[in-house]
Amino acid sequence: MPFVETVIGYKFKNKKLLKEALTHKSYSAEHGLKAHNERLEFLGDSVLGLIVSYYLFDKYPSEDEGYLSKIKSYVVSKPSLTKWSKAINLGEYVNLGRGEEQSGGRKRSSILSNAIEAVIGAVYIDGGLEPAANFITNWLSNQSFENEHRDYKSELQEIIQKRFKTPPDYEVLSTEGPEHAKIFTVKVKLKKKVLGIGTGKNKKEAQQEAAKSAFIHFRNYEV
Image (tube, rainbow, N blue to C red; front, side, top):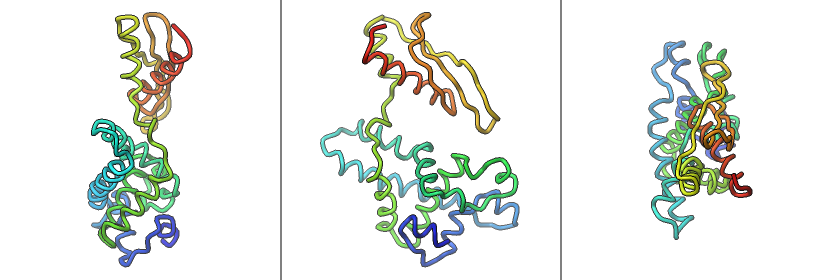
C-alpha cells in the first residue's frame, strides 16, 4: 500500500502491520482471519493521547490544564479523527466485509476514526515513537483547534442565566436518515423565542450547533 505510506510519511519495514491496521473485524470474520485492527487501535489511541498532550503542552505554555484538556478532548474525538482520515482518503484502503461495504462503511465515522488510530499503533510498533509523533504532529500543525473545543451550550446558558435568570430550553425538531446515519435538528429557545437552530449526527452535537448559532446572534443583537 505505497499510497498510504506516502501520505503518512512512513515506510513500513513490516508490511503486515499496515495491512492489519487497515483490516476491519468484518473482513477478518468473513475470510476466516484472526488478525484485525482493534488491538492496534487500542495501542494507537494511547500513543495519540501522549503525543497530542505534549504538543498542546508545548504550543500553549501560558494556558492551564483545563484549557489544554478541552482542546485535547476535541483533537482526539471521533469527528476530528474522522476528518483526518477523510483528508488522507484512508477509507478507500480499509478492508471491509461485504455487509459493511454495502452499508457505506468506507464513510462511517467509527470505522474511519478507528482506522487512523490503528495506523498510528502500527507505525509505533514498526518504527517507534518518533515516526508516530511525526505523523501526528504533521496533521496537528496544519489544523486550527482553538475554537473547536468551545462548549457553546455552557457559554449560552451562562449568558441567558445572567440576563434572564432562567436557562434556555432545547427541543428536537426532526430526525432524518437511516439508523446508522441519522441527522438531528434541534432548536434552542428562551420561553417562546427561538434563539438558534442546529443540526448534528446526535442530539448533543445538534444542541451545540444550535447554541453556537444563538451565541453568535447574542454577540450582535439583544433578544
